[in-house]
Image (tube, rainbow, N blue to C red; front, side):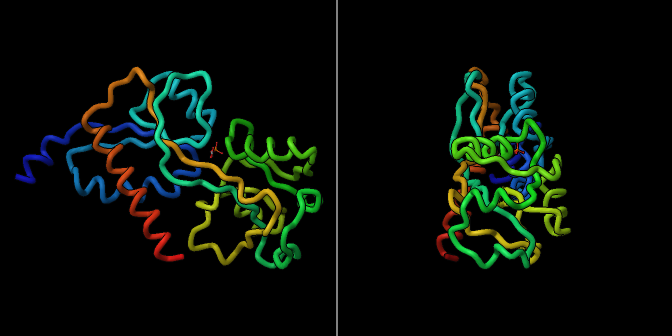
Length: 221
Ligand code: PGA
């Protein structure tokens, strides 16, 4: 019976995800935990550097991250897109302009994520490739804190579009050259590590959820 099948899925699931994925993973856990009440979940949210450390120490079953590690033997599977976009306060003068150049963006005070952040690294490599320097007014270790600082008028920043929730009316997403920066979330685990039944079940569940999300977006757009 279904109840017996559910009973088979017992144990613990250890997840570690980068900060941008916290906007989606906890919500997806709801239906999963309802489906498998016997599974206990621990979810760590940390930046790119933190994920690499946890992976090196083999602390978790599955990881979600955007930039794949170069020096670790891993298996990975694309999960969902994670585009980075330029956030400004809602009435910012640039919000009505199109095709804004990096040079123009660089004239605005910039709010930057902390060292170790994958978002920061992605922005920095775009700027370096184009020989552009931004004026970093403020460095903050959280996407949410950056959003508050932007809303407070301290500057502009580049964040994952997924960080935009019901507060979208407080921000304008600028139409800038080179943006969105295309990134993908991957589900990752060390190659040598055999996934538990629980981890495998969650892995399949995530892929199914991603498929539904993409389909819904296609229908909505
Ligand atoms: P971050 O992760 O929290 O390290 O910036 C986001 C990402 O790498 O996509």
